Length: 271
Image (cartoon, rainbow, N blue to C red; front, top):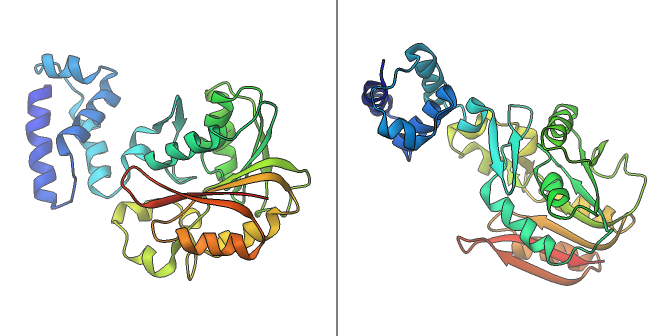
């Protein structure tokens, strides 16, 4: 089947499915690019280019069964790196890239950085790629996620350290900076999320009954292991909550940062 016929049938299948695909044409082209290795411009200009129909619609059906696109094509772009993505870890979000900019404003040459709850390794690898002299370690409670982070380290030819740990349980050294994007969704909020979110590891999403329990644990324990600063990604309604936790644990110079949509999304503080 050629490109123009694939597109026509795919659009009809998406409409018939009733799924809320916000950019159906964009997603169709992503699948076409993945299958053919050709870019969108080529495919747009060559509508009679022959496509493996069976392969395309097998992938489209996965999407219509709520599998996230990043899992289907197996990769996600993050800052200047390409990450392998699969069901072992949460898919990195675009807003997390903004956290790297914030950290870069404070990081010093030869700093040691700990990325806790690393998942794919996105934050740790981006920090290392943009600050080559910094010593970066990432940790996660999930061995599967940590193995994926190792694969991404090799894929991007970036040398970082890995620790399998439930928060600080197996962290023996000290670090100048802590960065963490921990699970921060409440149990109640989780039940109301879009269906495709349920394909991602629940362990990486739900922070407890209230949603902010991980911040309480990390902030309390970090004072023994972190020498200078901590940085967190937070839920849109958690800015003041996390600030209060930091204040109660005697952190200083606490700052809340908004994301590009205007929501509270990041917090930094000094030890």
